[in-house]
Length: 321
Image 1: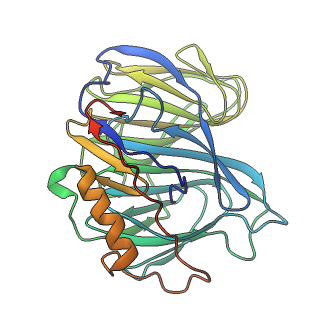
Image 2 (image 1 turned 180 degrees about the vertical axis):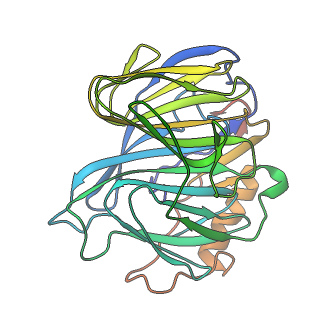
């Protein structure tokens, strides 16, 4: 999925300046962003004061949207570099195309994982004949410097490992949870899991104290460490936790995101993750004038034009001036 914000700002993320080394309960409210004609997303990362959770650097939650008489998701071809995209659905279907030749329908609780590496372009769209509802999340993972120029590729995994307990089913999207490991390729220590709880469930989920964590509420009524987290909001949890108390008042869906704090400072702008503003400016120019990011074949429409990079100078710790 693209960041379609035409006023995208350059942001410095990563490093340990914002990492909380102890357990906290920091509720993050979303920013509402229009994505195409009929899809509005709730953007949780990057957020004011909270740029990353481990290597997770971008989180959008959308739906459930009634798209029975709408085109649904329509994101034209656009570029990425220096990151992985994670497509995750609870309802609906998204058709992925990319410049490596991949063509794949991603359905609920299937992993669509695109590694942009040095550069890729892709599109995402609801099929012409589609389900009534669309509900999911789109997430990005920043690639560490040692791997950010890998060859671009796409992975699709229809079957993923699960961890179960009374009233809880946890599907491991990326990384490892309670010894269950996702087949998706990762380049830094992290975890992503989809948690489904039945009404009345009270349980404790095992965590790694070296990771920082956050929980995204997808649906239902749930308390996370005694904090009510409404759908479309995110609770940042800090580090130092060995378990996480969960209590569901209704059937509920959550996403658990975590990882070792990302040591490197990165620069994120539009759909690029780099290390300097000069690097993302060059990427923007190459998207507009060269074939660096390849061509998406089969999408019915024009590709996205890049917005102008703002004329600002960056300084560290996630601020611009």
